[in-house]
Image (cartoon, rainbow over all chains, first blue to last red; front, top):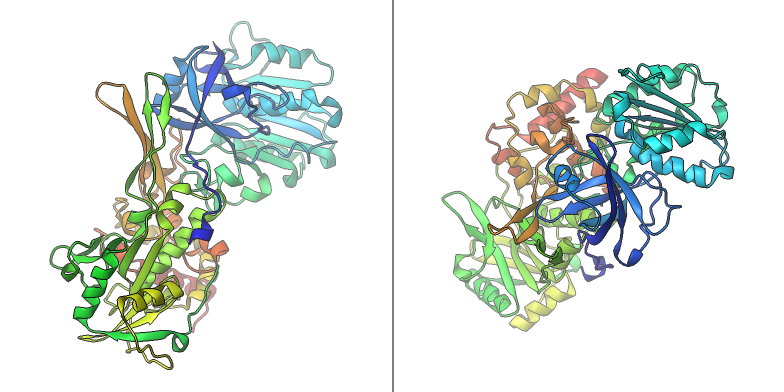
Amino acid sequence: MENLVKEKKILYKPQISEIIEAKMLTDLEKFFRIRLPEGKELGHTPGQFVQVSLFGVGEAPISVCSSPTQKGYFELTIRKVGMLTEKLHELEAGDKVGIRGPYGRGFDVEGFKGKDILIIGGGIGIVPLRSLINYIIDNRNDYGRLIILYGAKSPSELLYQDELKMWEEREDIEYHVTVDRADENWKGNVGVITTLIPPLELDLDNTIAAVVGPPVMYKFVVLALKGKRFPEKNIYMSLERRMKCGVGKCGHCQINNLYVCQDGPVFNYLEIKGLEEAI
Amino acid sequence: MVQENVKVENLKRVEFNEKELRKFIGFLKEKGKVYAPHRKGEKSFAFMEVNDPDMVVFEYTRTILPLKKYFFPTREVLLEFNLKDNSFEIPGISSERKFFFGVHSYDMQSILRLDYSFTKGEPEYNYLTRRENSIFIGISFEPDEYHFCKSVGIAIEDMEGFSLFIDIADDDRFVVFAVDEEGLELLKEFGKKDFVTGEYVFKEREFKEKIKYHYGRLPQIFERCYDFETWKRVSEKCVGCGNCNLVCPTCYCFDMEDDVDLRVEKGVRTRRWDSCMLNEFAMVAGGENFRKEIYQRTRHRLHRKFKYITDHYGAPFCVGCGRCSKYCPAGINIVDVVNDLIKEFEEREKVSL
């Protein structure tokens, strides 16, 4: 048996990290910039997640929303949905959180090189996609077109407002946004995110779609993409599941034979197509 | 997967009587903790630490909980934290030498399967540390109406994983096989001589419970059965209590939780056994539940036993101990479920034997 224990690494040990910036983005989402001990790099790829914990409350998987091209810190955007996230919302700059990770498989940013990238983000799905978007922006010459489709329930729920403005203004980004319900100041598109897909002119053989949103969104986005004859093999999506360990043991995130924390959270559509529990 | 079939005729063996075997347990106790089956109630048994070798039970059906509790405790502290300064400590885990005496082959096989799961990918420090330096001494048994390990490819006399294996040959005659060097050394040190090798015939031991197909054909069933009616039908009785997960020797899902003391200064992060049959198991923040119906959870549990992990491990993860059937409060029998799937498979495929 001795030879089975090759590596004595304790898996559930958090790194106590410092929040260096915290701000509310909307009524529900709070943004955190975090520094690991001794300014260590997280070393993630866009699409990966970390396990965030507060002693006495618990731990939960949260997507990293910053690009690994930003050094010395990483960023999270956390929606208030339960007890842990409620407590996390009380934290400000200078407070500490526990971090484990990064975990999982992110977007294949190497494999995407030279391709047009179509980002489709619904609601807080834009959070992990922001990491990919900023990565592409920082390596702009390595990629073709960058098309961003973003949908939210209402204008007040749009995240990263300053950056949205920048995406809109940049000539090398094609940015389209829609809301389900407009308010009096909204002049843009109204409707669900799938309404942004049909008008797109895409190079079907050379475009990657990165899709993240609420569970209900995936089926409709896939249908809309298929309506454009978009190849299934070029669709990637990130799935959200309950996770406890982050390392393929606890069983919570399992979809059929796949562990979201190890095999995902980013999946190629062909890997999860036909899995009833996936989308 | 390493499926080494130990060749019985090559193993050194030696005979014990009951008194001597109990003395041997006492001898092991001088070397480390010894765990063995004890009577617990009229018809139930449990693995417990041996205090008095005379209390060890040699002939038993199955223990309520399998051996996993020693390597993967029902509840364990992962870290102890201090809320005042956000500091924490990781409690030490002992890897002392210990003996498991009187283990049935299917339970040994379950440990080999857990070894696989806890070693694969990121090695699980906590499990593996407790697991190392464990020595297993197997024993034969008479199958009851729930055992079906033969149907999943595990013989009563399967010696893989053991250091010693005891065949209960007669009332007061125990034939002890030295399966590995460590086992042989123990016997010699105890003072045993006159080892013999050569052909040995085990008693005929009949299984009353059987899966209709050879386990080699089960992947074929589990390739097709996802949409079968059987799942819904067998799940009508299920109350979703998760008992089957707890008593299953190859279930190892867990939950993690923080507990704080009354003064809100210190606390512990613990992990405890969890059950994929419970409603909240696959629920995410915001309320979406990816397996909200009981039949989906039953299907998931059986796929974990016969397909998902099996596909890479190479053998069923179910070891045929019969615990989930015996301890199911609704009387659901796993062999009946698999046989019903086979029946539906045959009806659908119009194949007959």
